[in-house]
Length: 96
Image 1 (spheres, rainbow, N blue to C red):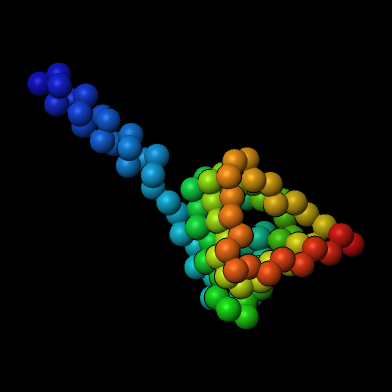
Image 2 (image 1 turned 120 degrees about the vertical axis):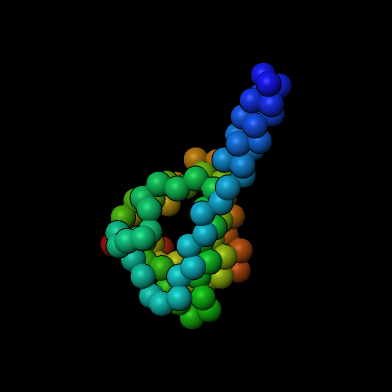
């Protein structure tokens, strides 16, 4: 019985570690609006072609990726706490 609990606990931990939250942005959006999180771990952010995500609040990501679309950074920060990826994503930084 004890071995069953240990195996179940190990399986639950593995699922939690590898679970990924996916955000699919289909129209222009801003980071200070829901559902976009200010902090996210294991996030996949898919942005449709021709769509712009405006970063108008600081965001902190861990093991996350941006895929496609455009990102406009307006005087705020995108901080990757660990590995991160930008895949076919155009980034424009406006420090003003």
